[in-house]
Image (cartoon, rainbow, N blue to C red; front, top):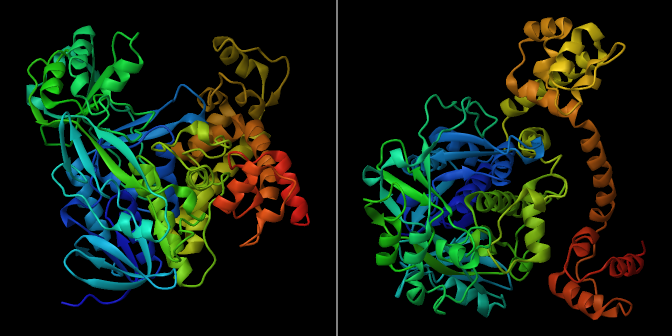
Length: 622
């Protein structure tokens, strides 16, 4: 059998690989997706959920650009929640529990509908390069496949090592063999590599749990969805349940610390700071009497449950003993113990802003190979790598999202300018322009870009234009409508807000923090207008946000303009920093190593001061 040549080869079919393959193929590149097991495409290796704080914004952005993660999530979710609704809209974050098996199945179905995409089950063991340019790959079964570009999305499989107490064995996931050869190839080519660690909790049989001893966690009463496309709304949901650890659980866990690979030196790599194992939590936060434990269903019909909050690499007998001391888990049956996994990654400062490597041309990295953690972060990188690989071989301009355009832009900029020494996870606090980068306006920000690329459909663009038209129409009406004191003062008194003494425009009432658009519907003119127009909830949400938070949004836009002045100043490729005698030695070393593409990127490198940037601007004639 002979495999033909391809434009792009994507190695690995996790969340990054699936988005990369879809994007590259949909942009016209003949694409081959090589994975070790075609049954596990876009497998949810850890928790059966998409979205969450800042992660939900990324999924919405992927969807707005024409990616598939939001569509697949909508079609397979079993519960939806909008998190942080008690805070401002910049913090609102959608999260969905998914049916794990249906999620993977739906992803495969979506990919198989792309005519430009082929699949092959095998392990890539080496890369073929010529004059520092990628030209193909070699596989475990002895195939050589040539291509113009390669995207590596190997997840936790590169020399993966699984730990359960004093048991260690190779694996990329439980029950799956590790990948080997690629790391060694890349190191020979001059890449710097490192090791990271992540972990996962036990999976248990829901029939053995006593949910009457736990608190039920229902989904939202009116569930939303991720995709801006015409995907189905949830009509029924499955509940999660919450319980807590206790002193007895903590003591049982401590008894196994001497056999813990995390504490006895067996695991030497760094794990995720913001998703620590249960043993790490009770060790670091010894003063806490309890920690939350969530029992999350893995699907509509399965009895399997994910024990969120109990990630561990302790011996299986210790896990079993401790779990049975948690309320509701007294008779628990474990389907699979929790484990930790160590794997190779490559510090992402070795990448350009397109996710192309600086050392080998047309070779791209996306996902956990770059030191990130999370399906959403991986998918966002995969989408961008797929887009840029396709554009590069088509000799088109690269597609780069700035920090003020998307959380995906923040993610990639953080990685390539700052690097990471621990698994990187996105948070709203990482985005300095989060008031503008909301989950509700991802389509407004990015669908025009996705449409111009050829990823977002014409239907999506028309839907966006209609939404923006209706939103502005409603805003204009509210701004033009006068409110009489006798109509609005009873509402203001009820809300304990200062009454008005003369007629004012309705928008001046809506900007008050405790007044909502629902309150303005008590004004007859506004009520009649809204009843006649029958705007969707999405439009009304946009109207309220754009009026209420206009001051904050405008201030951010001013700051964006200042930032863009630096972002638009390019640093010539091959610029000789060694001739700059007026900057610090640390700044010179960092600039030579990281090779920033713009002044904006250079300014965010740790160790490069504002005075160093001023000197650099002088050298550039600015």
